[in-house]
Image (cartoon, rainbow, N blue to C red; front, side, top):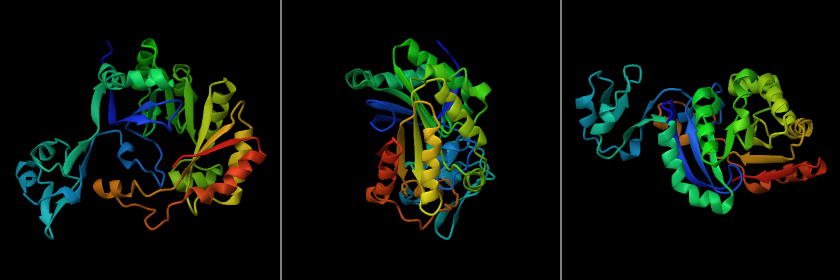
Amino acid sequence: MSERQGLIFDIQRYSIHDGPGIRTLVFLKGCPLRCLWCSNPEGQEIQPELAFRRALCIGCGECIGVCSFRAIRFKDTSLDIDRRKCNLCGECAKACAPEALSIIGRWMTVEQVLKEVERDLVFYEASRGGITVSGGEPFAQPRFLEALLKACKARGMATAIETGGYASWHTLEPIIPYADFILYDIKHINSLRHRQLTGVSNERTLENARRIAGLGFPLAIRYAVIPGFNDGPEDREALFRFSNTLLGVKRIDLLPYHRLGESKYTMLGRDYALRGVKPLARQDLESWVQGAKERDLEVHIIM
């Protein structure tokens, strides 16, 4: 039994869009990118975080009474949290009956995660599904990721990784063989624009995609289409040209921009940079579907 621990912020069941068959998603905390449109901001920091769901707060003040660091107070009839003072002890969350306060992120051993994942074995067997490790960025916790995938393979489970590929090849290379399938997130093909939108350049991401594809691993490209940021005709053609350079890669999953993650920023006390940007519908991406066919690529729109 491995006692290696990883910081998990969610485990989701019955996913049908994150690898073959029915899958259970395990989300690891920590990511080196800060994409403006990130729909999982709770996965960015590699530490637990305090979340406050204002709509659930009944104003009882129990959390104020148990906070030893005076990080919580009432301000203008609403709860106000000074996150600089908070030490994430979790006492406020324990005292909050309506669960308006909670700690996101818990340390779990490989065996604890497996116990959760194996509850869905019957679905994997019927659909040829398995476990997909996502994030955040799974390679931000490489040793736990490797231990978890090894344990899954030892128990006969199919495995997949969803990654942005922003890690050294030295980190990726020994872990990749334990994945049966890789979902590879690309944010932008232009390096300067990539840095503006995510905080880092994309040279490492693109080079790692070439290396992984060159090894013959099943690989699908994922691309979140964000209006005004990476959805222009030149962006589309650049993505298709790059995909055509990847050995054996035919599939591209397009993820139209949505606003489902916007409320999470408020919950974490952060600003949301894309406030007011309108979501995309399936029909907005028809030109992408047609363009992909012309380049012998298979596009799937994931709504």
